[in-house]
Image (cartoon, rainbow over all chains, first blue to last red; front, top):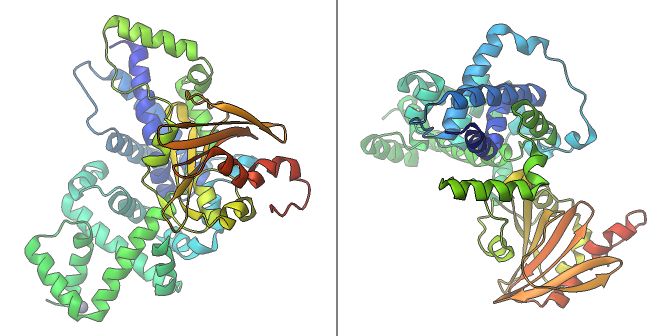
Length: 182
Length: 256
Ligand SMILES: [Zn+2]
């Protein structure tokens, strides 16, 4: 396939999944700057991999393909300890208005956000994959490179931990019912 | 079945990953056991909350820019140069290649109005406005409220070239709906329209088969109103505070 056509296809894949990538990266790191770095590097890796694809090869599920790359990129990041040395970029005014700062300041999400902050990153990620993206355990096991039974127990432990953190922070039933009305 | 086992099952059941037999046993237990029921409900509710929470995590312009730069994908290349797109289209057609929906059409106003799955249903205008990527305050909608139209829901959906399109729907108790769309600044409907000047702003308005529309440029956006039941003049009258906002930003405008 012509390279520019590949580029167009890739652009479409990335644009369609960028928000989800950002969400996964945010759930991994709970830090916007780190998440953005991670997404950027993931896109670059994905782009190179995409250009290497043979004409007969097709990405079956672009979102999980990108997720898998992000998860592996994060593993590399941790290995290289790049997360420890990332500089905090200056935040422009426009960025201050973004959704993530809303989450962090909104009264409504305080408890959930606080609990997620305390939750282990691997738990946040598995919850995000199952609860938000509704992937099957087989798909999650493929993305995380662990067995299905490991996914089952990780999710169980993750939800147990999240429940406990929420209960501790007084995340009351009343609070929850406001959420479901939205 | 013991509580410890049910707790193991609760998570898998939530994901539809538990066998039917085990699910039935777990449900029977949950119905009898208030402790397990509370856990089940909290898991379910947290899932709903989390889905809403995470929808606020979006891609900043900064990141978008960085990615475009890193990958050599220039936003402007496709955004500002329709000629290049036209040339590419002709080239692709000429080569007999079919690129599966690479080129997405600019959405038709009525499709936006009529074909929406709301991601967010609420009366809270601030929430809706944030979600739709608009900057609206309650007083901007005062005329709509007087006409018994209240905020109903919002969506924020991406269209070609990463431009954001947002929509807030207003509904009255008769089920009539007005869609308040936030479109890119350079949005132009292909529909025939008349022009009308209000406070130095040109409002385009008109009608198609079974709906009326009005749209105008304001700040860095195009605002469009679409309704099945109201005429463009009625809609423009309701939109008064939205249009005047620009004039009155430095004053204590009450939006009456
Ligand atoms: Zn029990």
